[in-house]
Length: 139
Image (cartoon, rainbow, N blue to C red; front, side, top):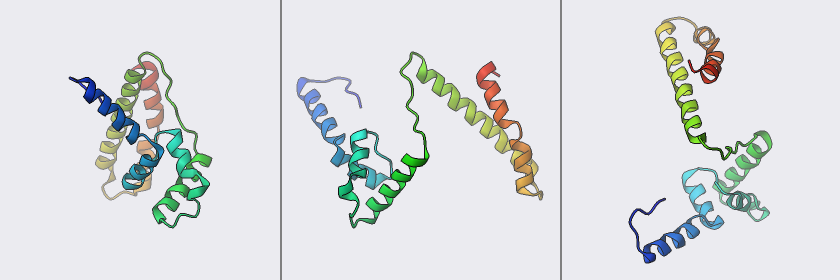
């Protein structure tokens, strides 16, 4: 969110709105209505709070179960705060999309009446290495 041209009243109103919008209770409503996971530790902990354990809303139960499973099974990535990180991330995503798009095109060209798993294996072979090389060596 940004404010381009403002007055003290608008700035105050924006701050009040952001405080309300990012409150743990409000995040629960946002999470349940959109399916997105919470983006703050407070909201995440609020949903995992034991008080929701016996909630009758099936959406909350499903969300809690998913979040607990993800918390156990996944390592969460927190990007470093370094100069140029946004550009590195953009470059990473562009290169990944390019490799995925190229692989998809090759797959579609070769699939015909062939076994899909066989074609996939052929196309996938080396794609990861190509991606890593593109990141390391710029090609």
